[in-house]
Image 1 (cartoon, rainbow, N blue to C red):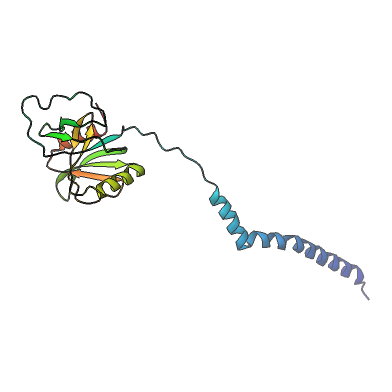
Image 2 (cartoon, rainbow, N blue to C red):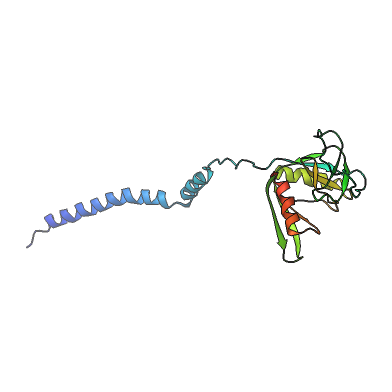
Amino acid sequence: MPDYSRRNRRIVIAVVAALAAAAIVVPVLGVLLTPGVLKKQTDTAMLTTTTTTPPPLTIKPLALRPVDGPAYVPQGDDCAPPPPTPPEAPLRTCDILKSAVYQLGPEVLRLQPVDVDSFLNPLTAKQVVQVTMTQESARAFADYTASHIGEQVAFVRADIVVWAPKITEKIDGEVLQLSGEVTAEQAGEIARMLRDEA
C-alpha cells in the first residue's frame, strides 16, 4: 500500500502557500482596481497644475476718446502733428489718412491690444483690421459701448485718430474687426499704427 501522507503533506503545504499568496495579492489588486481609489488618484493628478506666466504685452495701450461733433475736411496745416496732449484734456487732430479733422473729448478708456492684423475679407471683398484685446479690455469696452450706443468714438495712437467708428450696439468679445473703404496699404498702415510701430 503506497504512502500518501508525504504527498498529502506536500499538497497541504502547496495549498497553504497558495492561500497565503492570494491573501497578499487579492487586497493589493482590490485597492488598485477600486474605482474610488482610481478616481481619487485622478483627482489628485488633476489638482496638480503648473503656473505659467502669460507672455509679456508688446503692444502699448490704445487710447479711446469720444468724438465731440462732426469731423471736417482738413485745410492748410490742420493735420500738422499736435503737441503732446494729456489724457484728461480735449484733443483736436486728424485721422491717420489725413482725410478728416476731429475734435475729441478727454480719454475715457485705455484698451490693451495683444495682437493686430489686417487682411482681405473674402466674403465682403473689403479690407479688415482685426484687433485682439485682453479679457479686461474686452469687458471694459463692452461696458462702454453698451452705454454709448449711437455715439462716435476714436481709437487714438500718438494723438492721431487711427479709427473712428460709430457705436451701433454693445460690442462683446476680445476680437474687434474694423472694416471700411480702405486699400490694403491703408489697412496695413492702420494695423501698424494700432501696433504702435514707428
